[in-house]
Image 1 (cartoon, helix red, strand yellow):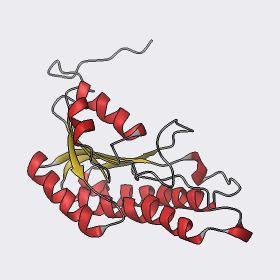
Image 2 (tube, one colour; image 1 turned 120 degrees about the vertical axis):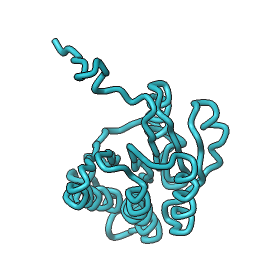
Image 3 (cartoon, helix red, strand yellow; image 1 turned 60 degrees about the horizontal axis):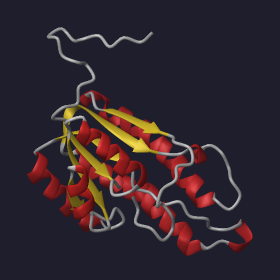
Image 4 (cartoon, one colour; image 1 turned 90 degrees about the horizontal axis):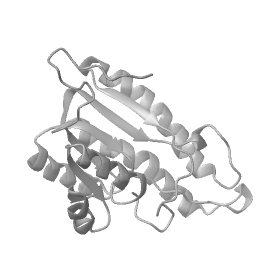
Amino acid sequence: MFELVAGAEGTNPFEIDGTRVVIVGGTAGIGLAVARHFVASGARVVITGRRDASGIAAECGAHAVAMDVVDGASVESGFDVIAEYLDGIDCLILNAGIDAHTGLIDDHDLETFQRVIEVNTIGIARAMHHGVQQMVDGGSVIVTSSPAGSIAVPGMAAYSASKAALDMMVKSWAMDLGPRQIRVNAILPGIVESEMGSESAPD
């Protein structure tokens, strides 16, 4: 039976009360569920997304910042706002992404293909670049990837490629940030009922 052992000073080693958390892509689905959990556990949480999330944030006790991960200026200005609000990041969760069918190779929708890569791979790298500059040493980065990064699915080449690239980026980032004792890990959830899709905001 698992038993939680208190720390040397009688504190819970898994306590996150007061932790400063940023969830990029936190206005729906997995990101929003995680935000609600962190807030309920006492963390200070910022959620980002393309949509106006002020109402959603107020409902769950988080703070909303507008950010479109495919727009460099939007990401940079968004993290400037976050810096003023949090003054440092303990945990950065990179959850933005879209899941879009691009069709079989002989009938590819190349515009959708490009959009998937821009959001799921380049967009996450962009958010990571700006976010990690505000992170404290010893912090944690959690990236939402997918089993699709290692399992081929017909008509899903763009999505699978974007997640396979993301998995390798996570491994490289973990090495890059090791000297700062910042952990970088990916989670690979299965199919989750959410609003994610080619026409939805990258949340």
